[in-house]
Length: 364
Image (cartoon, rainbow, N blue to C red; front, side, top):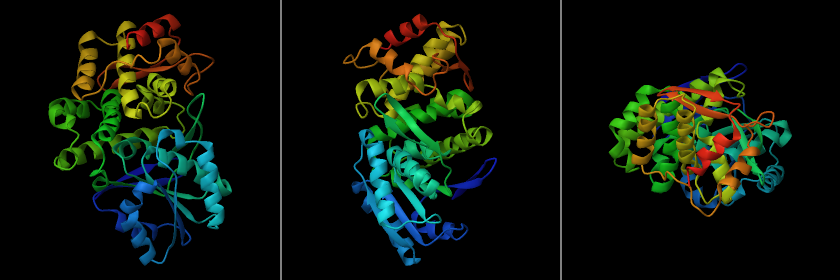
């Protein structure tokens, strides 16, 4: 097991990375000032996967309640939050009790948000079961639910007691879900980790197989490096007032794609991959990145098996409209994270709308 220390201004907490970590949670809890009641929030189909955790906590004399809600991005909503809070009330959770978010990004965001507003905030533990969660969404304290006008428009910052990144939980993950998380790993390489980017290029054929069972060493390396990269960025900018904005590379267009198609048609990473292509082409058009480097980024994304174009069932105008409600918009102006090179990116604003429109149209 490797432990990554996430050091924030008001709070430090560990990210435990390894295998077969669920049974170790009671031991980790011994170091925390918590009560003996725990609500595990998950999807119905993940309860069996969570059973070792439930058994370990029960044996350690914790009172465990399991609350479930249906999977899928459309359920990342205020209605689900209210149903979770109702469950917290029924289970009589108090201020020093704990919520464990056990699942992918939808569970982590929704359960985390519910925990952050119930009694003005109770303890939270993140245990992501998807690659996307393990390298990105479960690290850093962002929690949110969607609004019909945009993704993650309703949310809070809620740092957990600790995060568990257990590689063994990925064994049954569908290839499409693994690939979705892979997009975020590519992001870390482009915005700040040249070594990771070169590693992705060097092993692209094996990585593209998305085989987390037979290539365990490779994926353990990718996950650990990415989790450490995310922790480093968050430690420097917890509330996204500066450098943390770089983590939005690909997300301005990506979130708009998710919104325009209706949440669930595109997995998050699938939309972000197209968004990274768009942001890279934007950088090239603005003469901020040279063509050779831009081609390297696009080639890697393509070789990893991502679509490079948007399905034609929506229009560029619909994507543009969705981007206007993105939470990254300031003073009515869209902001893009644009690569200047490998491991070199910056936030760019004041981009002419016509230029953005041309880039979006070129993705169809």
